Structure formats: structure tokens, C-alpha cells
Amino acid sequence: MFEDREDGELDELTAHSEYIGYDGDEKVGAARRSASRRVWQLALGGVVAGLVTVGGYGAYNVVDAVSGGSRGDGDHPESTAVAAMAQQPPTAEEADAVARQFLAAWGRGDVTAAAALTNRQETARSALSAFREALKPRSLAATATGPAPSGTPSEPTVGFRVKAEFEGAAAAWEYDGALSVIRAADGRAVVRWAPNVIHPHLDTGETIGVRQLPTPVVKPTDHNGRPLDAFPSLRSVLPRIAPPAGADSVGGQAVVITDGTAKAPEQLFVLTPSSAPEVRLTLDADLQRVAEEAVKQQSAGGKPASLVAVQPSTGHILAMAFSPTDSPTDQFNRAVSGGQPPGSTMKVITSAALLEAGVRPDTAVPCKDTTNSPRVWHNDERGDFPDYTLTDDFTHSCNTGFIDKGLEKLQLGTVSTVAREQFGLGLEWHIGIESRDATVPVPKTKDEAAAEFIGQGTVQVNSLAMASVAATVQSGTFRQPVLVPDAKRVTAPGKLPEGVARDLRTMMSRTATQGTARAPMSGLTGQIGAKTGTVETGTGKGTNSWFIAYRGDLAVAAEVEGGGHGNSAAGVAAAQVLKAGGKG
Image (cartoon, rainbow, N blue to C red; front, top):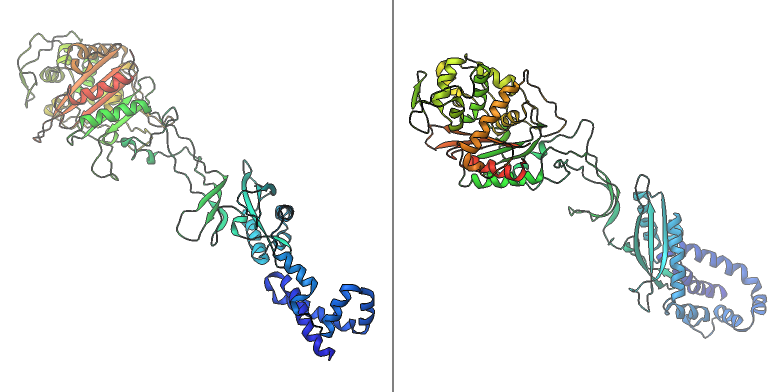
């Protein structure tokens, strides 16, 4: 009869032992049942002695259990006490104690001990192990900070702070969290396990780990370190700027939360920041803003336009603007890559060639109404001006005077040589991005030479090239313009003679104050000089407007296709920039 009761009573008692094991773990329960059975069997011979030794209530309880007394399964005082305790919420003291034990074990890396203090031991152990394996912290400290306001009387919550240090990280990662404490069925106070115990933002189905940050794109700045991204003319330019040799961008690493979908991960902490080499261009953000607005105004109605500003003393490009095309992905930078005849702004170079050939600024160079080369040429200002000098022809932009004196004094190819050797036009420039070099070919006929003297025909330049012409006159020395300060520059084979540079400055100054450039240059003070250009296109779309000028240590060239005379559209745009950035 005892043997029959033994099996039944063992089932009752080991049921409690099985529950205490992890989450109903069958292996733990089975082991404990087996152990309990062996204990009972070994104790059979000493039941009476046990009863005498125990005595009192305990003796009654054991006798009752073995002999099949009248008490039911749930009436054992020990089971009743555990069940009663399980119904009581953990006290604040218990919550604090178990939280500190859990946090200490987590911090020292004993994930098994930490997991044993939770209500889901295997899940907690796996999550805590994965956290350490993914992040590999050099050190981790988790410290209780006291009761958290999110707790309830039945489920007290303890706040804590985590501090993790990593190899190579400049600073420690610190964050605050909270954990809830509940009463397990066996009466213990344990941590209610949830993903947000590891981090407050971590949820079911999400993982926390280290991810490579994107390699940053180099974003060049102006010469003062100010951003240039907002300028329309530079959006297609900046991505073409290469960083210095050996200075590559580096992607960093960050602790992130991911959910396994295409959703962007939540970044929690940057372990190592991404880095990109600093690239400062020669541009000036303030002047670039003015240039952008000036070009925008003059290109209204769909007229292509461009403007470049250069610092004569250094060759630094301070502003570069051009009107956008309809396609946001195909932005042709006509400011540095365009090519078209410059009109009468070319007369600066022709004048340099004539001055070197012995013509003086006050040499008589009559301005006839028309002349032949044998092609027939005329001027915008019709009529004969027999008393004009070279300076008068320059100031009033007389085509016939330059053609006649050029054919008289200059050999075929002389202007091409002066353009190349003293102004750098036709040399291979390296400004920091792709650009088109000027073309001033050697003429084969007098008609071609006549066209070249006044900037028509096969001469091809852009605003960059002509801004450099104005800068060369202002400083007396050709300095190849650059957008990137350390770009490899070319030097001109020759140098503009000092006397020639001085005469050119005098002629450009008079043009700015008394000649065709007077209107746009009005109000500008200090050292100023200018030259207008009007190009006949023969397309029925009107003439192209060109203007080059300088004020102090600032030289500008602007062009507006279909803009009319040089002193109108292009002149207005250039003067806006000179007013903003030029100094007397």
C-alpha cells in the first residue's frame, strides 16, 4: 500500500520542484522527480525516526502526506506559504536587491547568472550573450539608480544607467534604462524579461548591433570653410572636386537597432565617426551669392549666361555662376566649359599687340564708318571719326580702327602669340575641375585676321578665360585661375611688358568712366577698368553681350547670349559683383 501511495505523493511533491525549474523545463523537472523518488525510497526505513525527530506540525505534515491523511494537495503548509507569497508583489527592497544583482552580473559578463534572475532565463541568456557578442565592449557597467516612476505597486520598476566603453571610441556610451520586478510562482522576486531591458528603444523582433556607417561624400567649402551646397551653379561642380591625393573618405561605425526590414536603422551611438578630407575651394560664399543672383536676373527669359570673378593677385576663382538648363542632371557649366567669340573684349589683347608693335595710346587711328579686309566691316556707332586715337578707338569700341591698324602693324598670328605668351590663352589650364581652354588660332587670311582683332570669327573663349584677361591687365602678370588652391598651374612663356600693362589700365579706366562701359560702372570708385563686347551671331537671335572689368583686387567677366550690347546685360551683372566685392 505504501508503494502505491509513494508514486502518488511523489507526483504531488515533485510538481512543485518542476515549476521552480526554468519555465517548465522538462529535463530539470524529470531530474528532480528522480532525485525525490530516491530520497523517499532511502527514507522508508527511518520514517518513524524522522517523525520523532521532526515532531509538531512538521511531523503531522509528513505523516499526513505518507499515510494519505485527510488534507488535500493544496493544504500543505509549505505549499500554502509559497502560493501565498506568490500572490504578494515584490517589495521595494526586494526589487532593488534583485535589480542590483542582475545589473552586477550583466556588467561583469556573467550572462548565465544574470539570466537566472529573470522570469525567462533562456531567452534572457541568449539576448544578453548576443548583445555582448555584437558590441564587444571593452568594459560595461550597469548601475541601479533607484525606483523609476513607471513602476506600479504590483510591479515595481528600478531605473539604471549603462556605461559601455569601446576600443577606438573617443567617448563612452551611456544611456538610462529601467527594468520591472515581479514575483515568480516560487516566491522569488525576479526581473521581468523584455527586450527593452537591454535598451529602452529595443522591441520584440528587433536586434541591436554594430553597423558600418556610409562613407561620406566630400563636400568642398569656400575658402573660409562655409558650405556651398545651396548654390545652383555649384551643384554639378562640387561632386567633381577630387580630394587631395591619399586623403580618402572613411566610413565609421555605430551602434544601431534594426528590425530586419528595409527601414533605416535607428542609430544609438557612434563608435567611430565617418570622416572626409577637408577640401576648401578658392570660392567666396558671399560673392558667389551675388554672382548667382546677377546671372539669374540677366538670364530671365531663357537667355544662357555666365559670370566668373577672379582675384588678380592670386588667380583664385572667387565666384562662378551660370544659368541652369532644364535638366537638373545635365548642368552644362558654360562659365568654364563654354566656347564662343568674345567680341570687342578681345581688343584688350589686340591693343597689347599694337602697343608692343610701337603704336602709342595717343597714336592717330581714324575710325572710319566702314573698312575692308577685303570683307566689309562697320561699327555699332555709325559715322566717320578721323581724329580718333588708339585710346579713342578702345574707349568707343571702334572696329574699323582696330582692323585698319592691325592689318598695317601686325603679322598674321601676332595676336595669337600675345594671347598665349602674355595672357595664357591657349595654354592647358588645370583649375581643379574640367574646363575648356581658350582657342585663338593663327589666321590664314586677312579676313580671318580682321575678325580676330575684334573678337569675332574662330576665337573661342568663356567667362573664365576673359576674367583672367582682365586680371592680367590689373596686376600686370598672368596667374592661371584655379578653383582648388593646390591645383597644378601653368605659367605663360612671356610677361606683359610693364609699360603695356600700364597703358592698358589707362585705356580700360577711361572706358569705365567715359566710354562704352560708363553706365554699368557708374558709382564705382577706386582702381577701376572695363571693356565692353558685342558679338554679332548672324542667327537672328540678336547679339551676345560681353563685359570684362576690374575693381581693385577683383576682376570679373560676364556674358549673356542674346543679351544685346555689352554695356547692358553682361555689364549690369558684372557691376553687381564688383560693387559687392571690389575695393578701391
